[in-house]
Image 1 (cartoon, chains in turn green, blue):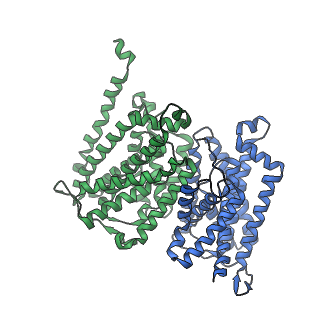
Image 2 (cartoon, helix red, strand yellow):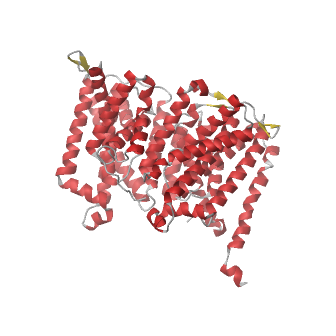
Length: 326
Length: 289
């Protein structure tokens, strides 16, 4: 039994498999909810990926970047464009969105190659996002400007995604695959290098780790994940508008990451589940959404800096994600 | 035509310069870049509007009330929201300032509704004509305010004991504390000063543009563009950057396409950071994470 004492990992790994129950339980959702709640469940799946991608840059890499809405918008517009103009099947459209998001992530991190971090990165990504929104508005020959671009009804491997329920199953499949892939990546050598850069970039570089490569990689992965979320969002809403990807959206993404827990994958899921329904609800009260999200983020920063995921870890240390949560 | 564009470019640029200058002062004093600054500017303008329209105060008193309120808000922000997260990662400050900004914006929108409000004109000065070029009273007031503030802060930062203090705290808070500087108090004051300067920006913007809760976002990005262009942390850089940005917007808008006015600032930011990250006058400073 000395072996288990020396290496507690198998027990933790077995415990982690409990997370696999979540998507299985989620399969039951379409059978118990109505059409509107089903729409909300689909939106939650979209925002799980939005938060997951954002969390890699903000939490794991510890860099402040506003490019998340840009990745999200690019994913959505790419999907709408390749489906309505080129008749791509949905599977390929999702891949295209991931590629576009990944390229955008690479561009957003180009400055990192020049040693520009922190505030410079925040400012350049802010400019990048707003520039893209201008492109959506003024590229109206392709994007239809502020009228929005219609997304045709997609087929996923021959199954029509024409109502909320089939969309849910497709989204659930995509979400599970992406979450699992991200979880594996973040527990690998690459993920540990990314966290090490956050903790001390100079020390990480002194270990012979090429920090710029990992920063670029984190951004590319983040962009691809959020791009996929955009591809789901385009199908969810059926029409993409430039206004969906403005600065007001940033605070919602921020809120989900911080409330769930920075650099925690479970946290990203929790954050998206708790907060997705709120902006929709607040739509009837102008200003309430910004007020609410602002206050919630302030409270989290002051009193619960590691988010709801850290409460879970307080209940049982087994919930602690060994490599993301400190 | 060119002269007229230059004059209006300078007037517009002076506003950006003012925003950039107030962010630079705060950055030099606290190493924090205030991502909520645009919303504080909007808050300053909003207070003036409410004081003039709803309480019927004369503009001068409304302006003083706005500056005073924003100064106190600055003290409160520093003590209540920034100080408690001092030990956390530096990224937390940025998120905190964004969130406070969003709370202000949300609050303004809740009170304001969706309307866009015009402010009655206050600087009722006759425009001056110089050889066919019109110079409005607003432009003159804005430019002289910016010149005055730049002179004041330049003297404070480079010619007084206070400037040495700013430098000491910027370089090492711990070292500054050890030689007997009350860093906490210093930060509070500088937050107050930074926000009061933001309020001055808002007061100058209020009479010449339509007021709406999202006013701050566009000025924040233009302020960033001015700071980046001039070089982060440089006072004169912020002003020169602001003026250059104002002029480029006018020239591009007139000679190329009016649609470009909106994105000049973004293009400036991206171009400068990719080509010459240190800007015109700055040096690249490594900030602790």
